Image (cartoon, rainbow, N blue to C red):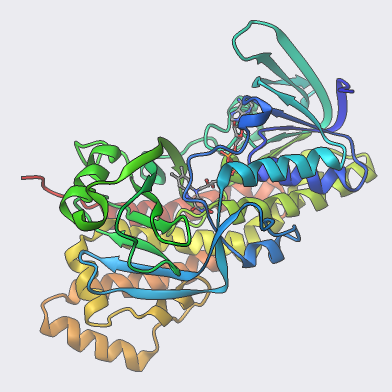
Length: 466
Ligand SMILES: Cc1cc2nc3c(=O)[nH]c(=O)nc-3n(C[C@H](O)[C@H](O)[C@H](O)COP(=O)(O)OP(=O)(O)OC[C@H]3O[C@@H](n4cnc5c(N)ncnc54)[C@H](O)[C@@H]3O)c2cc1C
């Protein structure tokens, strides 16, 4: 039966919260998992449903079972402007398209089976703070004013984009609460059925086409093996178009590839937001931590966040266990979690790709077309861009400069070079993430200086609708 006091209380039973609950409960810790949704609806998230397979290895968690996998894909194709050109990015070990609702239910049942207690239909809306420590969660039942309090030694915010509890932490904890609109993606997604099968079911398709997804992309993911069900959506930063994402997606379906999409039947649809940047600078406090979307664990170039959240849950579980065993739940004890995530290959990649994101947001699809058609950037560059400092060799660079000069596009190559240099700089700063709160503010200033320069140099591209 449910108790009111636990080792760990987790608000949010998304992919991240359920994974953390599973990792802790299976080692005998007492865990409460709270979600605003009722049990049967947990996992029914608006999502692209795609997860690269390598994340399960990094996060030390089981892969989705056969029952919830809809498709296996090799990687993704990036199309600029027209679908005649593309870069193919093969993912290490491929990737899965899951039935997101059933996968969420699978993760939930795994956590419950290991002993986690579920409090469903409960909206967590505040932290109980006592003696400068988070000691519990105050929530209320959906549709009523009945207040419920659940206490724990460590309180976790895994509520996703709203980061409800993180926003309630005392300001003196110096938790990074601000997310600028440029770092938010407003996204719209449909699950559709079509008459003509999609042209390639072995890859995800990302179409960088400014008119229909300014600063973002339109995605078309196969959702069944005959290519007639699709996960179809788009995303953009707020304020770059007077149209809403769903209006632009409908225009795309009718104007760009009507032979596939104009007569689609919509089985499910909805909108949600994605926090899309480097990780929050500080997401731990006394007896408190955030993980997943609420801590901003995501790939800023593609907005894939499931695998980043799983990895974050694994890192958090190690440090939570250590803190519980030592009986020390202070911010200093939990700092190691944050530092390990930020300086890991995931944290560093996030910071580097947050820099790369600026060039993606600043140029139009005409420019992307030039870059891909003339091999200014190749598939191999894009794969290396995630983790490697010098992803353009000096010989190649010279060739690219000549090509760009001939086409009057030298600015792109110069901007690319600038961005590559800044990616290297940011990586080095992230590797020096402070070992305690004392170093945090000077470190943040260094990072913010870099990103304000990027803001000035790369204003977001806004298409003109005629
Ligand atoms: C349209 C779209 C497409 C995407 N496509 C992909 C993709 O293809 N691949 C990928 O890897 N990522 C994708 N993402 C990102 C991905 O969905 C998220 O990064 C990931 O789901 C984050 O998981 P999470 O558990 O941290 O948060 P969430 O999945 O958002 O889970 C949060 C949970 O907390 C609960 N909750 C929220 N507030 C409260 C509260 N106050 N009290 C109690 N419970 C609460 C919610 O009900 C939910 O169950 C996409 C996102 C969107 C919006």
